Amino acid sequence: MRQTGVCMFGLGTSATAAEGQSPAEWLLAFIHESPTAFHAVASIRAQLDREGFTYLPEGAAWEVRPGGAYYTQRNGSSIVAWRVGDEVPCADASTAAGSASSAPYHFQLTASHSDSPAFKVKSTAEVEGPAGYVRLDTEAYGGMMDYTWFDRPLSLAGRVLVRQGSRIESRLVALNRDVALIPSLAIHMNGEVNKGFAPNRASDLYPLISAGDLSAGSLDMLVADALEVEPEQVVARDLFLVNADAGRVWGATSEFVSSPRLDDLMCAYTSLRAFVASDNKNAISVYACFDNEEVGSETKQGVASTLLADVLARVNGALGYRGDDLCRALSASILVSCDNAHAIHPAHPELADALNHPVLNGGLVIKEAANQHYCTDSFSAAALKAVLDDAEIPHQAFANRSDKAGGSTLGNISNMQVSVHAVDVGCAQLAMHSCVETAGSRDVELAIEALTAFYNANICIDGADAIELA
Image 1 (tube, rainbow, N blue to C red):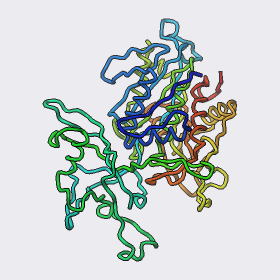
Image 2: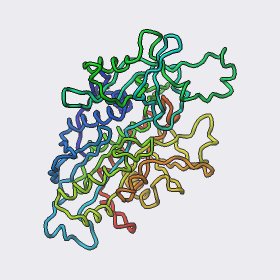
Image 3: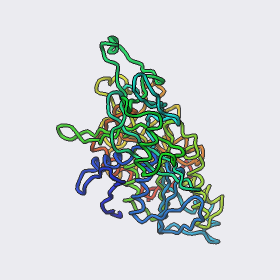
Image 4: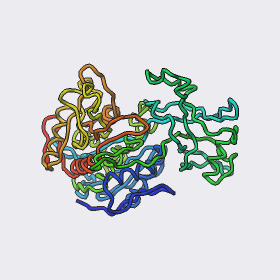
């Protein structure tokens, strides 16, 4: 296995973990530097650059060779990286013709997502009054747990389009200070609040940014000041309200990790660490992290887009293969879709399936659903379980209670564009989609070990008939 050096996920003035800290603390440093999908992908790109990967823009011609490591990105919020194994052949007359019973090569892929539920600031944002108050007009991005956002200092981060003469440039911004808060109504004014509270997103959830010092236009002034440009240079923005608090490892024996955005930056991080550390000479290893999973993925950069299909087709062509060779390669390939799973809840164990309920610090969770909201089937599960069992790495099973439909994730959406054998996995967590989520601290290292074992195993698939672990 190829060992990597210390990877500092440092961007700007954000906090970073120090050498010698635990995998959970490294995860927290990555999350802290990733307040939005744009920042997460920038941090991933920085890590890949440090590891010697070559950036291939979508608009450039691609040269890909065995032994090479590459990545591309779309929209600044989705990224696909790949490493071509040393023994993956370039096409010639013999390899392109191939054998009727085998593919010329295969892919081993993971997919995660870079986005998390948050409040997005509208284009015209400042709501003035009553009195001297200024609030921000926002709308929910993804399936929010609204009440968890109240009464905590919040920051702003995202992407800003800045005009420089005739050129408009995309810039990342993170204010890195608390500038907003959504205040609760006092119990004296809402005596029934403890019997139930359903906040109105068009009034109750507007964050307060001033008691009189700011006015209309102040938001662009804040953003421009952070970017060291003039307010009139700010043309447009994708700006989100974010919990900028640093996550923490906690518990009497440090069993827990709590942080914003564990879903799904925990999987984005652990699969990245596994991808970078692995060395499979016989496959094309692929790491993908997509934006917009929380809102359905049906965007130009979502997993339902052509991004992954475009990348794999271009890699196939750059290695000298034909279109039908790509189809043959995909038939022999496998995807691990990585998105966190629900741990059994300490106060409500009755809401979990009686038998298939994962626990914190129990290892990677393999998720199944008869309604096909998860892509796992017996074939793909067998492949991953065999790899993990051979490496003596623990794993768990998740299924919804039979009277609950449950959610969906990346695997089946991805398969609409790139059809491969696929298995849905994740790390067990509590309070999914809360402003602060909780997982098991030891599951960070267990997930890295599990996904590294997946990348390093040479998984040879023959249709849906057999799996050979070479």
